[in-house]
Image 1 (cartoon, rainbow, N blue to C red):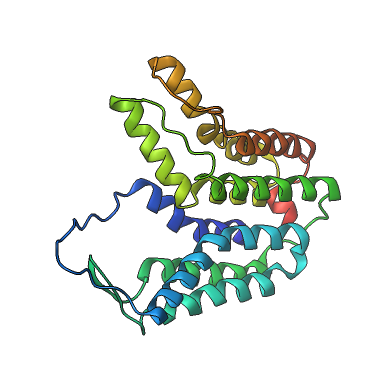
Image 2: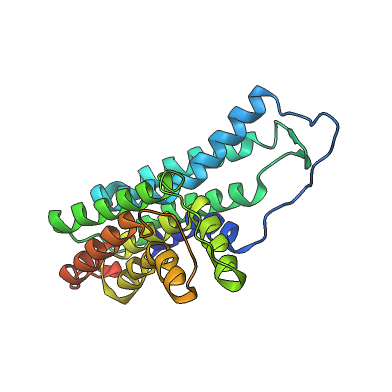
Length: 252
């Protein structure tokens, strides 16, 4: 249970960032303030650490389940440390001065505590190598879908609610929501929760083509489908089905 809570805590920043409105600061004619090189390095490291933590914890649980409490706590602690550094270094931008990524740091602290408490979980049952490899592939495909989002970007002529949801899904992809969903599915391994997680990956894969067809919008895109997410959903569903005898409790 604590393994799942650790990944869930690490995934919370991406989930909330995808549903909460972003900060809009406008544009001013005078010279915009720029953060220092140190601030850019510190905040970038903390941001990337928070984005990749769910995947790192998921992979640790898949490949090194017995060492998860120690390694997971070390990984989460590193992100916690990086988040703590943001309280020491101010980040100056057009939106003002930011000092401290409080929510990200708090989630990393919660993930660290959950990893340490994972010692109390039941000893993990060995997961078949094929299932472990399949879920690892799902995570890699979700990352590929997120990182190549700009490369395959096209702009169909969607309007009204179709366009609104397209923008929301695009924002969710940029903040790593679908990577976090894949990580949650991989730690569940089997059952309805794991299946629901990988089926959710079809949303960013198929929304654009379905919305384009249903709304009759014009487009000049050669490919509207997010194929990495489709592949991840198929492989994940097969892995969840083949590992249906392995429950979260069995894995510890």
